[in-house]
Length: 458
Ligand SMILES: Cc1ncc(COP(=O)(O)O)c(C=O)c1O
Image 1 (cartoon, rainbow, N blue to C red):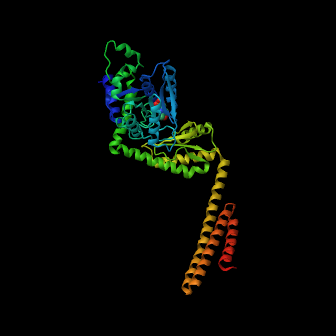
Image 2 (cartoon, helix red, strand yellow):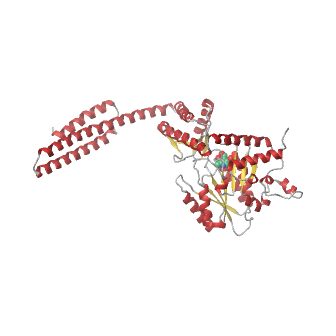
């Protein structure tokens, strides 16, 4: 027998709540993250147009474009402006919290929007501690916190109650690998209670209210009728992860993602650096790995690469526009082998796309190897010469009995070591201009002669 859609919807909300650590009534089923962000912003009691004061929305420079569009619409409707907090890969939790506090003390900050994991640099923001620090300073004057969890759920452990945020918007079609067009929004119970009337996106409920008093449940902020099918898909996607977690606790899933991503980053640095590859954020500890190529500033190049990786190797990357780059997401289902395979696939694309550049690169690699060899030879030759000097010095100390003789020999010894070091530096500098094995042979001959002069005066 088919279950009543209402019961199905309740069980979906219950599964989501178990997954993100909240009450089922705090969950609103949405189409995607954007929908959740729009619902949250739309529920805030911003100052009306024409007011003397202005409300502020604070967001970081690393938020997804979709947030900008939502804010643009809010700015058209209300007396609202936005301010961008610039984050770098070195921004600490304390610095971020301090900035939010100091801006909030000066201006009327209504809401702060933060990504839990940034979509481009893959930074994991310590949202729990940022919120805790801000609330500690501002107490009940704290702004609301809207967290964009699009790149976090199914990727890192998420417990919205522990974060103590007011809203948490996410979707199922990214890291959860669920159906496109399914997502959820968490809204803190106390906020839902106080702001019942502000979730006014679904007009049908404004009408229905005449007949049915509104409850505080998230259900009342959803459309009357929904395509329950896709949400069943979302529930299944979450259950797959919840089941996997039983075997591999949540933190271990993330640890696995972290380990594979680290391996991927290392391989990129090792194998693609000669092609000009640069990690967008090599400090990242998330499964988001974004990279750009120094000489490739054009999005077209990355589009071509993405297409080739998809068609030839079934590897799905994503193109970032600003700055142009390609991004990969490593899931707990991926393996280190696949990470290595993706690097080899990129290498093969680069060799095909830029044969002349690759030829140049292999020449550069050869030259680098030769210079390493020369450097090693110089170090070894001079280390050997220094050993001879120190042996001679030991002998001299045992042979001389007079204090002046010992002092004299010590001075000579120190001078010889200085001369050798000076010569060694000269050769190391010279090594940079050498280009072939013949150059190395000549250098070896010359070094021996110079060392003999220093050691034996020949
Ligand atoms: C951080 C972040 N927020 C929001 C979105 C928009 O997601 P959705 O398509 O679920 O609205 C994306 C999409 O990639 C994202 O990465």
